[in-house]
Structure formats: C-alpha cells, structure tokens
Length: 173
Image 1 (cartoon, rainbow, N blue to C red):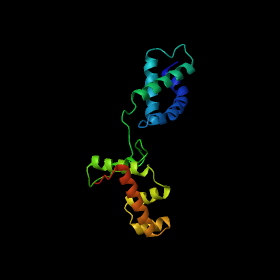
Image 2: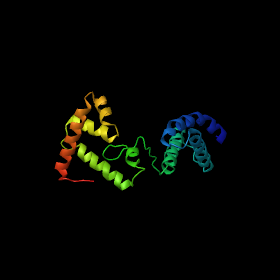
Image 3: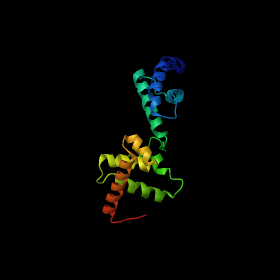
Image 4: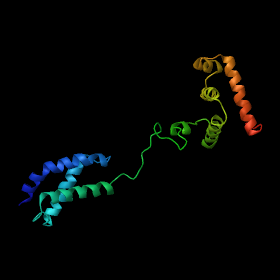
C-alpha cells in the first residue's frame, strides 16, 4: 500500500480526531493538529510502521502522538482576569488592586481591617450600612437605598464606630 492510499483512507478519521482534541490546546487549532498527525503518519510510513498493522493501530498511534504533542506544547502561563479572579477571601482581584491614591500595602491593610470589622459582631443592618458607607455613599443615599431615615443611618454609623473602638481599644488612624 502506498502513502497516498493510506492517507486518503485515514484523512476523514484524522480530521475528526483533530476536531475533538482542539479544545485541549487553547492556542492550537484543529488544522494544526491535523497537519501534525499527517506529518507523524508520514514519518511512521517512512520507517515502514504501517505495513502489517491494521488501521485502528495506526489511528491510535496518531491519537497518542497528538496527546503528547498537546501536553508538551501546552502554554505554561496562567492567564488571569481582574474581573473574574478572586483572592482567597473571595474578593475580586480588581478591587484589591484598585488603590491608585495610596500604596498597595496601605490599601490592603485598610481592606483587611474593613473585612475584620465587617465580620465581627455586627448585625445584618449594620453590615449593610457599613458596606454602603465604605463604597462612598452619603448618609442620605444609604438611607434611601435601605428604606430608612438618614437619622437611623447616623445611629448605625455611631454604633459601628463604638463597637470597633471597643474591640480595638481606642485604635485611631
């Protein structure tokens, strides 16, 4: 059997294999995989391997070659998205790194203190008020969002400050 006959018989199967394996190599498309299998088949044909073996054996050899090809040529970098990536505590990476006006260490310290405050001994309503205030909303805007008066927001704010100072023994910044 000559190479052209073998190639014509196996080409449709190799194309299906390339299509099924393309998702495993993010930056390698199915045409590249198909060509890689064809080159592999040509090299093996030159070595006399296809003689005396069935087509299934040849196809499995091509699959194995592509699997190793993808494994060896896989991208070694990890692509991160600031919008989707999350830190260990679940906050967005974009939020953590968005501290243009202050050094990153100061920003991270402030955010850590905020999370510590938010998760220690506050009622659900106090947490909601604190979250809105930290986001930069005014007392009246927070009251409007929560459906309560701005006077109650001021009371919640004072309770939050009092609890935090009690916990941190008068800590001031």
